[in-house]
Image (cartoon, rainbow, N blue to C red; front, side):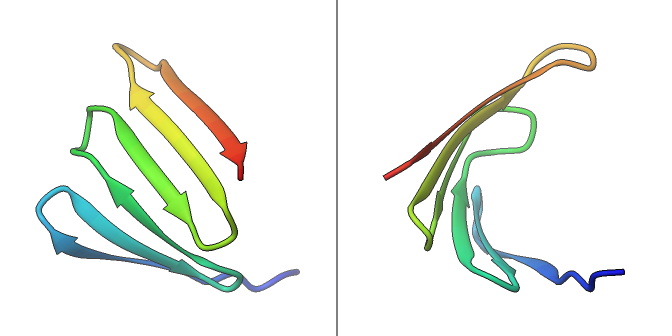
Amino acid sequence: MGITFRKSFPIFPGVRLNINRHSWSITMGRRGGPHYTRSSTGRRTVSSDLPGPFGYRRTTRH
C-alpha cells in the first residue's frame, strides 16, 4: 500500500496553495465556480462544477 500526502492552505480569499509529495500548485477561484490551477510540474487545469453531479475539467501540460 502506498503512502500519500496532500495539504491545502488558503493564501488569500479565492487562492489556495496545494502541496503533495511530488509538487505544489496554486488554485484560483471560488468553490462551486470556475477554477484555474497551475502546478510546479507545468500542468494547467481549468475546472468548473456544473449543476447536479456533473463537472468539467481540462488539463494541459506546458
